[in-house]
Length: 81
Image (cartoon, rainbow, N blue to C red):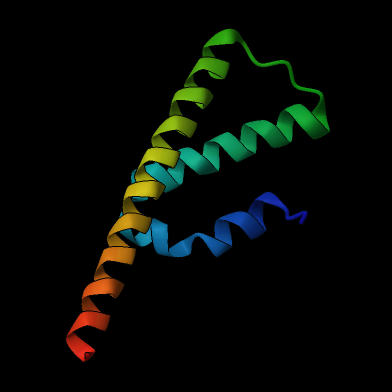
């Protein structure tokens, strides 16, 4: 499935409400990737390192958020029983 950076960010709007810092980091990662891909931008090593750290933070935060959502749904289903 191919999606633009804007489409990806739009689909992750619930994350923006939960953690604006992580959302902004992801936005920066995608913008840098777009510059590299479409404008043939060659970022300095420091930008590569920051993008990698931001990506790791995003994955960690998104995983934690997903686990919380799953747990809340599980508890809700148990209450309904």
